[in-house]
Structures are given as C-alpha cells and as structure tokens.
Image (tube, rainbow, N blue to C red; front, side, top):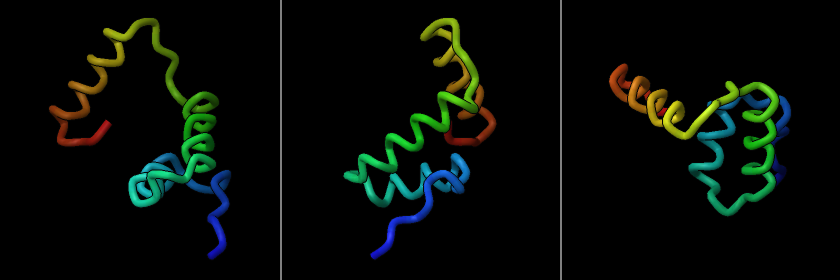
Length: 62
C-alpha cells in the first residue's frame, strides 16, 4: 500500500488519516509541521483552552 502525499493533504485530511492510522509517525510529524507553518501562534496554554471551548460551542472539533 502506498502512503498518501502528506504535503498535499489539508489539515483535516491529515487529521482524519491519523485517526485511522494512529501509529503512522510520519503522518503525525507531517501534521505537526503543517500546524507549525500554517497554524495560529499562541501566547499561552489558556489561549489554547479558550480556542478549544469556542470550537466545541460551535459544534466543531478542535
């Protein structure tokens, strides 16, 4: 089985792939890089918790 091209996948696609392939460390690393380069910079853990609560109140998964 060929692995997907993680660089071409969206964050959601990567997340879904990882949920189905939890031991794929290459995919986890690709997601971490994606978040690092395209994600929001946080100033504190409290800010992360606030974002998670907002997403859940909107019915979205963080």
